[in-house]
Image (cartoon, rainbow, N blue to C red):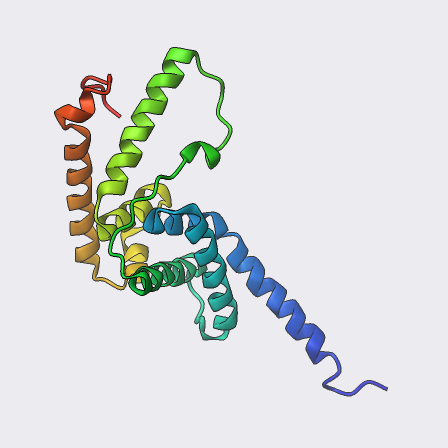
Length: 191
């Protein structure tokens, strides 16, 4: 004989699966943000796992809306918490983009070499930016988030997002246009 509450655990399990599915679709974005903030693949992987655990445990506190922005805010906060724990404002670990790049069409060797050099210059320049600039650039340009979503994730006003993006783009452009960078064989070719 079934009671009124006997189906409740099954409903709760079904709801939990739906909650997890809502968050799992954003795993690539979470890892991408963590990777750029931490500058270390292993730390990024660990932090994404921690962030997902936090998200699952606190999912009841999620009030609806954009699950991606909510999750990325947790990832961002986890990264900054870890950096504070380590007592490190900036870390300088190399990131190997070739391990995480999507399969690309085969290019001729010269084009492939130029593209690799340009990509490396952009990666190096982006990695040299302060974390607050790197963060907004990654969220806007790589994750394609709106200014409002970035403001929510970073916990800063919309105007601050716009000014940081502007400054970050300027610094990135200045870094890419430095003569010593151009001596690597790229001349003044656009990136």
